[in-house]
View 1 (cartoon, rainbow, N blue to C red):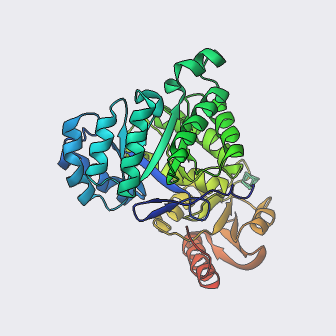
View 2: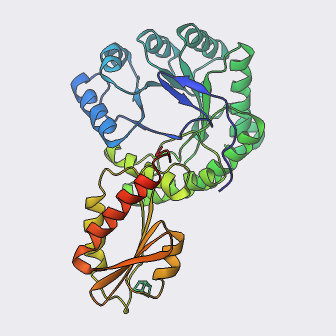
View 3: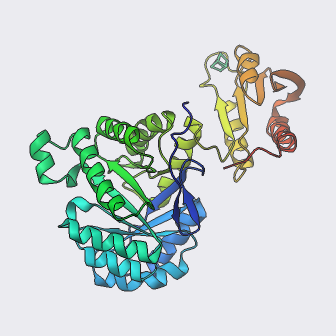
Amino acid sequence: MSSRRPTRTVQVGKLKIGSEHPIWVQSMTCTETADVPGTITQIENLVAAGCELIRVTVNHDRAADALPELRAACPVPLIADIHFTHRLALRAIEAGVDKVRLNPGNIGSEERVREVVRAAQDAGIALRIGVNSGSVEKDLLEKYGFPSAEAMVESAMRHCETVESMGFTNYVVSLKSTDTKTVLAANRQFAEKTDVPLHLGVTEAGRPGYGSLKSAVGLGALLLDGLGDTIRVSLTADPVEEIPVAFDILKATGARVTSPELISCPTCGRIEIDLEDLMNRLEEKLGGETAPVKIAVLGCVVNGPGEAQEADIGIAGGGGKGILYRNGKQVRIVPEDQMVDALYEEVLAWKADNATIPTA
Ligand code: SF4
């Protein structure tokens, strides 16, 4: 993986966004924002799942009326999502949100955008300048013929210039599209031009199965390039489902590892242990564990020593037993029914040996 693209630090409530800080996971509530109890319940569920920034739509005055109560109940930074009506952005800022996301392309005029920037500046909060392929300005659509990556980047740069001409730097940018290739090209091009932190997302990715894969392809490629300071996986599902997918994408790319990585073989005719049952029990045993340890579990000795050498802990099953490896060296042989406990003991030993490794 490339090293992380250097980006400035943006303060969002108590959270700092930028390359000096972890890549944070964000989501958005799907309740009616004006339904305060329902929205608070969803916020609590998202936070319990690990969500670190939460966005709520502010689509009318009743939603804006709910913001002070939501702000008070939300333990993580709260972001107001604004489209079309800059007046609602001003109301959200007054209500004490930590960040406003707006697409300048659909706010109506540059003066309205400037009004929001001034209010954010006075309140000391952050902004996200969102550029979606669906909200690229008309003149850029005419120039490029369609909402290409180039059109999106030119739009983003135009808004960055407006914001920075006012001396405002506490903002991030997102360039989103439903087309993965456009997302990749737009973010890569934008990253070359500025040090503004990037919020990554493949918008409207779809149902959890395909949507998770599509997000993994788009976000994963950018994260492997060292791009991205916050991410959101957009699924047509309870937003709580987005959170583990986002953390798994961060883990698979090595961008941020907050739980053990389990490597296991697909099994084949050589299998000599009940690997699926073993993995189920191991996953359950490690539930909530945050150590960034790599554990390889192989169904036979064919790849055992090799894979175990690359992992921190490894086990290769065979004949009702498992050969246990630590840092590539065989340490002991354990019966199949004790493999999960033996692996867990090794995880605890690994944690003791690596107590200084940060988990986030
Ligand atoms: Fe088959 Fe062994 Fe490879 Fe697993 S590790 S897929 S059981 S050869």
